[in-house]
Length: 215
Length: 171
Image (cartoon, rainbow over all chains, first blue to last red; front, side):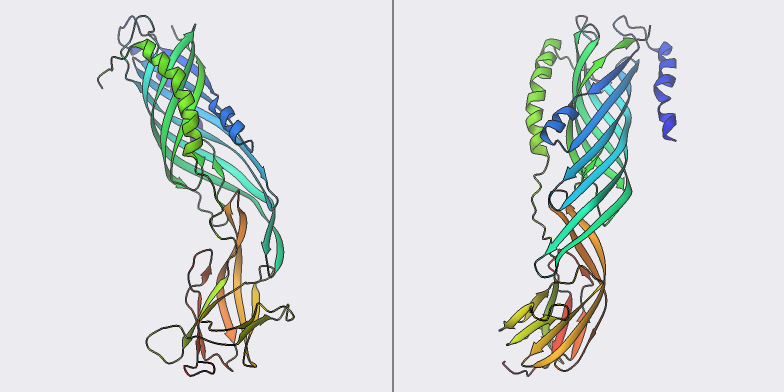
């Protein structure tokens, strides 16, 4: 089912010819690379995320967007080790609220909505639980799958800094819809969503993008 | 939706400023994980007088609590004025046996449970949660026993009520 989501941008591009006649508008695709994961990795070295995006302006100020990425967590403490790896995907739409400016016709201020999905497997191969009376108990939690579905809404900017190269940020509020209920071990970090433990999250994406006009 | 008339150069300024602000937000938005939740989940027991309709704790003097596995190392050595106590369940096995020594009258309590490893947080590590299945006991001093809350987690619930004679030595 998910693989059909990748077809959306191409279907949308095929509709681009129907776009209204506007000299400041040309249909385009804009692949991007999120760099906020690098900042997170500096703050939390145990979490590594990589994320790419693709938006398609199929109609003036209307964008279809796909974002996807990978997650790896490896945290080792004296009493345990926790590892996770997986992927995440977000699909949705952006709407540009900025009036087109002839000087910078591709700069946008965006309102965004997204549906997010994440799948990962995680394990704790080494656990020591101490008790002052009974002593240390060594155990492990084997690999388990985890899935999550959530919605996002946010605002953001994208501005052209040099010849079709854009910088942009997006501030997102997220709310969890459903996730795998595992009483034994919740994931430490849900790829694309953030740390677990709360059904709501606020996060920032900061991306560099390249705009490719379609015609 | 009505388009906003925002000057593009202001956007560029915002674009430069916002990441710095948001980097601070990113740090502040993440909850600081503190190991607030207890990782030691003891069985909480309350002593109640048998045959009373209203429930209230009864106070017991000179109570020792031992285990079969480590009889030389009492869990509690001569408690006074005790109306409730916490027992550490054996996290190596699915059962624990405690001996209540009350003025040299001994009762044995066999507790059967299921164990489940539970992640408190990645920073704080793991603990063991227990689900009480069954309890057996002798009745030299103890008159009755009731499981009040079978899930022994890091909540502060009282899990077991032990009913003892309402006229007991030391009271």
